[in-house]
Image: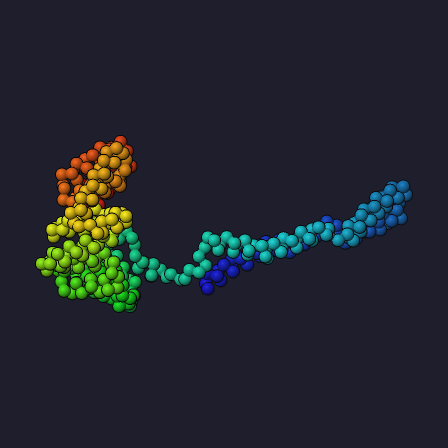
Length: 367
């Protein structure tokens, strides 16, 4: 309210500055005192004639001139100020009273912040500064959450930061508070399980496994939870179960899923033989095939892709699919050969070369 009061005072002062000169009427150039002077001069001429100070002809001429001036002064006294001046002053007064506030508000609303609440100086000094070290920012958020322990969104933001800083116990507590005050979700359960696993040095503990299972119960396609459940099966000495989980993930995943290389490598680690992603038609055709025929069909598709890329090497995505296919088929020699051919094919195109290198990094290769 103080701000609006100041604005009102400023507006009133501006209007007063405009209206003050308009309210002062100018005096007519000839008023009643001038007519009195001319009358006195006529009387004085009569006295001079009676005293023989001037002649009759000079007196008559003087009376005619003074009478002419007296009539002119009387006419000016009777004429009011021009009507146009009155209208002009009234128009200017209306503009000052109405137009000036409207113009001021028109400028303020798009440029100002009329709905912004008070922000005392003491609070400004405590506001987070993005240029501060991460530890200082985290400390400020923790102080805020200590004073506002039910701020679920604050806990949700803080938890992954604490995990990246290696403060796993604090991160676990933050995730628990986030679930309590924001609500349960598959993502939060999976993140909590991942933090518990990191706190145990990469071992999927029973507590972490329980969180992953809760995440799957909320969302059967939760990628992180599925991967770690496969990792738990591998660590428990059940590689076949781990392979089944990871192969199912690959079967549902799009060809460009960023986590595909990680799961493929894990599947190879437990002795599985992942296959490159098939199109819907190819998957339908391979559904009823035995393992030998399916592998032969996949190798044929890979070879056709390699042949096409040798004829047209501009297809960066095609090269990445070919390298990935050789990798999951366990043919490292062909994978390296395809990588070399891909770089040679796009060597003269900086943008395609950049895309290829980025894709190779996602595959875990040196881009």
